Image (tube, rainbow, N blue to C red):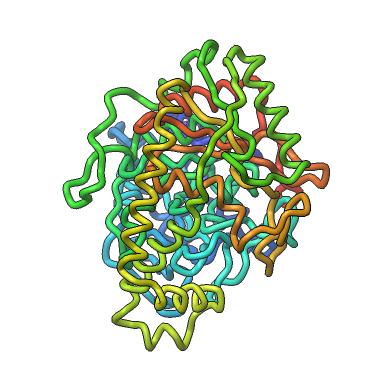
Length: 470
């Protein structure tokens, strides 16, 4: 068993630990040894807490020996994105401004995971303040994709995705303001759900992203995400975006039937380009949903590019948040984020209001689709993982693309707040993972989990392990 602990799911590990067939100390030691072996190549873990993790493991063992009640994730090792506050454990936000910052409180997502018995073994690499969709910063460096170390993990939850893909814990926290859970999940071949805005509460620090950032987790299996959502969902009085508690278990939703569900398939989400090798994998996965009994319609959508509007909102909020430390920050930033903040200085309040109106118009335009369909299928990204040090190709199919064009498929559903997931569905001929995006109706994570769990059962991916992890 110990040699295979790293590949057990959170659901399996929690069951083995509760049954006392394996100890939390064994599991934690296995995960820490894996960091020792793999992290020099991945740069996924940027802050460790070995002693605290081992101490917590011993505490849970004692509780089990006494017959005490333990949480549903008791003894399960997890990693935490370095944008999430961890009391007593360094939190850098990927910035030299916070290189030595140790918060006194946890983010709500961390607090709830700890309360459920999860054991934090480290913090994961992220972009500076999450501002770029690649995991890279002047402080933390590049995260390396476990399928090809010359490529990036995507961002900004890239360290979390790489850690999970390589068996460094079955679950890692993430956040998604424009694709930052879904893009790394797609690039690293794991499952990533962006729940509905407010499903998992959040209190931003530093400020910014309030109306865009969705909290969630990255996992290797759908049921692990569902279990985590059962633990994490529910209101928080201090978070005005937080939603009421769900009325049913998300883990139970994974057992639901999907035959007869109506799915809309939009390869280009309107008029966006997709690389042919990626599109071929996506089409094959859509056909698999049809074989599982879903009714698929390829739909024509007339939708605008929301990227510029989303960037306006993000940059205005980030610029305001950094205002008190702006002079200090300008001496230490990553070049990419300095350019973004320079762009923010040219924006006006009219730009910000018009960006908000653009998101309202998009939500109104896409709403009729979800009156007729249970979910929308489209790309997560139109390209596979980008090379480190680049922002991806400048064109697709001979068509020139704007900067960060590969977020075109993710950004809209941060702007509308709907739940959306990245499902691992295959590989390019070069062996790079491809993710299919499942977009649900407002507040309906359960249907996405049903669809994803049924697909996983029929076409499992969990045994497809990256070269670095074998």
